[in-house]
Image 1 (cartoon, rainbow, N blue to C red):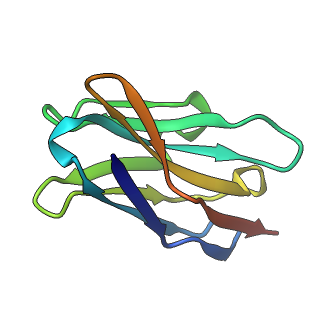
Image 2: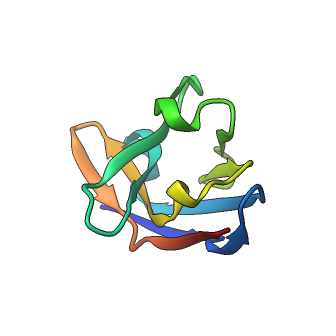
Length: 117
């Protein structure tokens, strides 16, 4: 089992910045990658960014490339999402995800990001 706790969400104006954090605990050694997904009202959950635990290889959804940066601190078992130049369409609940080997998905409870114009 892996437990994930997100923090850092909140209200920000268009063009502003926020940094989300996700702290993992439990069977950390099984984690292969971690990432952030988001779900806006009335929409399906979508991938935002992922990062592999061992190599730090990253992957981003097209709409956030150049604005968001995912990073990790393996010593703290924490993943971050730095979000810059925020837009109203970034408003969503952001969920932390961990994928393990053997394959399992674990989710945090989510943190709300609201971007106001």
